[in-house]
Picture (tube, rainbow, N blue to C red):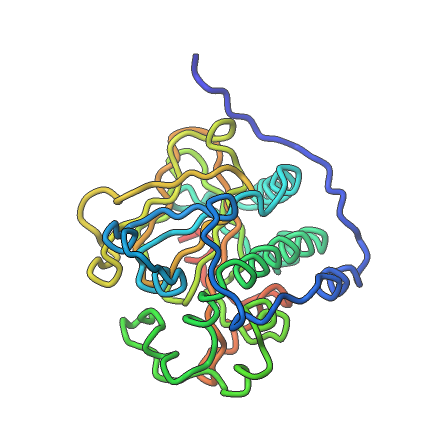
Length: 319
């Protein structure tokens, strides 16, 4: 029996209060300083999908370093509820209704774009992202220590930029003293974001996102649609090799992950990956890539979810 994929509709139940966003950020308790904790090894807290099997067999693995080297993709389960995923998915589908034909079967919407999403959706995305950052700071503190905290080694630990160059401008030193984790960098506006992100992507039948690298320290990708109910095909493909594999890889991906809605995939900026073609139905993800802000960061990459960004037609999928 063929699967029947249908568009879902759910009611948005989050608050319309303009002050709710500040409340979401200030009411979550602070985490323990990352320098005092080690990475959790519990498989109940996160799943490790290794691209480098040799690295997985080492007696001691620092996950922040393994992520930075493109050796592993981490999956954090149950970050968002099914209701939250449905709400964001439906909002993105509504945004698609107001848009004409798109290239490559893919539509992308900046979360902070008021022509696409209401304040309720922004608040929901903000809360979900904070849960991811809190989990990383609490259970994988080496991610902050290795990839985000200002240090003499910071530039050498960053992925290559879009020009395939190693970044040379480090963050301001005072951030190491004022921020204990990625959450605090986020709340202080000290993150640099990929163009137009955080964003929600929607893939229709035959829709895909070609192989690419994100070129920032960390990517968070949260599926909003179910591979069992909403689409066939799809998923995120990953190629092993990190910098040894360019953005035009030969052959199929080393692995393709299709986690359940509300899970969070996290991986490094040198990893070549792709939104695999959807065969049928509709697939949607909430995604953002980010690094610690530096004096060299472009002004249009510092908005986060605070203001509508300037984006190119290529970002929106209209080219």
